[in-house]
Amino acid sequence: MSIFNVGFDRQGTAVQVRFQKGGRSGLGPELDAIKAKRPLVLTTPEQVDQGKDLLDTLAGRAAGLYTRATMHTPVDITRDALETVKKSNADCVIAIGGGSTIGLGKAIAYHTDLPQIVLPTTYAGSEATPVLGQTENGVKSTLKSERVQPEAILYDAELVRSLPVPMSVTSGLNAMAHAVEALYARDANRLSSELALSGLRAFVTGLPVVVSSPDDLVARENTLFGAWTCGAVLAQVGMALHHKLCHTLGGTLNLPHAATHAIILPHATAYNEAAAPEKLAPLAAILGSDTAGGGLFDFAGKLGAPTDLKSLGVAEPDLDRVADLAVQNPYWNPVAIERRAIRALLQNAYDGVRPETGVTS
Ligand code: NAD
Image 1 (cartoon, rainbow, N blue to C red):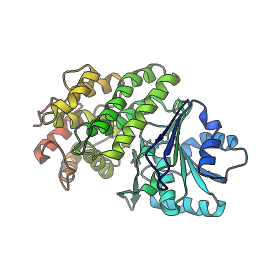
Image 2: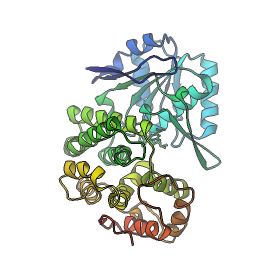
Image 3: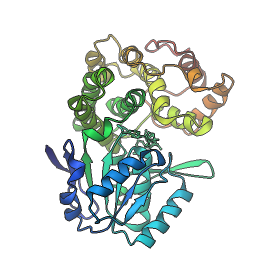
């Protein structure tokens, strides 16, 4: 077992991070630290069983189970969950799930200031950030507030073991995307770069083991460590072209979050590598490749990740619309964001062509 006290929550107390296989059956330290007596457990409909198992371990101490967490935190679900919080007299929330469930816990905390304990079951890393993305009438907005930062995180490798291998791979690549963009972020610093490289190493060594032996709890815990460090850098520095493209594609075409990240990452990396080769060289070395973009493409392909937007059901004519939107209000990026080059990048991602560094049209 490893326990870290990192950062600070809104009361100025360190956020407690525990890595322990099977730790979910002993949440006493986390509950006692926040003086909680009636936690409401949150899950998605697909993870009800994990939620029920957790309720059993809380031995009558829980306020109940809410199972309607949904991708991109729709505000109507949040309103419904807030009713349950009120009726059940809950004094904290426990999110057991991926970014969707954690997002609901953050939204509840934002409205009620209730403390949160998070048990991540994917690698998305939302638990490590003070960011909440929400959707209303199909429009996604993001806010940053220390009110949404969880008080305690428990990484229990046994929970992520049930994440199917294809989702483990895309979720891991989603986490790696935070770290890749952190390497060339405008506000990068030595600590954020070291954290990013540590997360990238954890996934480059751990994900192939997860693919060949999904029940290997050492590899599962190592990749969860990667999820945490990649989430931590997402909280510290600004994201660039890759995240802008994924948000645009996801928002416009309603594509699956992690798979979109997995497909775009090698292309966005190659686009930026021309301007930031020295910042991406350590990643190329970790991947055993001449370039970071090409190395990521090969790595994703070997793990069986989707490598083309076509396979997600994207229609080729949609690429024009996505390119138009992606160049509007661009995030800061090390390379100028030009419509023609972005359209070419999207075409390569659509066709699943291995990207060449600096070749954008
Ligand atoms: P998810 O939480 O939507 O999970 C995808 C599916 O997998 C769900 O059906 C879920 O129930 C299931 N699942 C999750 N873990 C499982 C497990 N161990 N075993 C079996 N099934 C499991 O997916 P995600 O990629 O973790 O999260 C995506 C969401 O998180 C998006 O809305 C994204 O915007 C958000 N996100 C937010 C941040 C942030 O900092 N705010 C960071 C990353 C992602």
